Image (cartoon, rainbow, N blue to C red; front, side, top):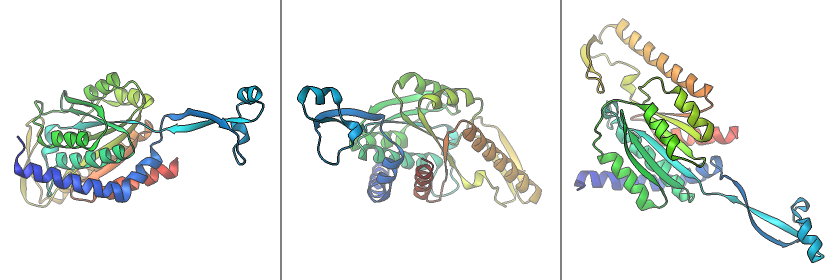
Length: 291
């Protein structure tokens, strides 16, 4: 049973996502994610202005007049969302937790996909694969994905990105667009990520909180690792502590960007509390220029 608050939140996400897709994202999405190629449509009689190279010489010889082969773009694609629901996603220093931002991002990407007649599926994971929803079309299906992401109660707390990537590799047989939505607080997943990116168009969507990059000056502060339960006390009033914290965060972000770059994987960086729609638009336009 969905609570009134959750139902209201889902409805607001639906309205916001559809508006954003209709106004901006649908065209951007279509321009950067192409179909699998061209498929044969028909043979028809040549008309002035048709491309001469399209002439079907076998049919032309039989009919005694020129005919051409016509092809159309095979547009339909499959989009797979691999979403991290580990305990670190429950953190949020602003109005929203990282998991909530991830759900809204997935709604935007999903509505963009179905607007272009593509199918959308979901893999939700923690330290294990928790849920798989096979790819389908339609707004009702998308709202089911978003609802599941918002109300799902994971069994695990940790992060096992390797398990999620390997599972995705086993269930996806055709080339797909795969969005990995996570804070990437894990290690040793480069090999399965490389394998997956060889067969599919993989995009990393890293969701962060501003206080994960910069420690606020609030005196003594106890930080708890949501996934392991480990606790540490910091004196955030000390400039050296805040400087070291920021330096480690920057080092981690640079390492992450370097890994994605080496694997030729696009990255979208999203920070909770900021306008992630602008981040998506920026990504689409960067990719379109490159293509």
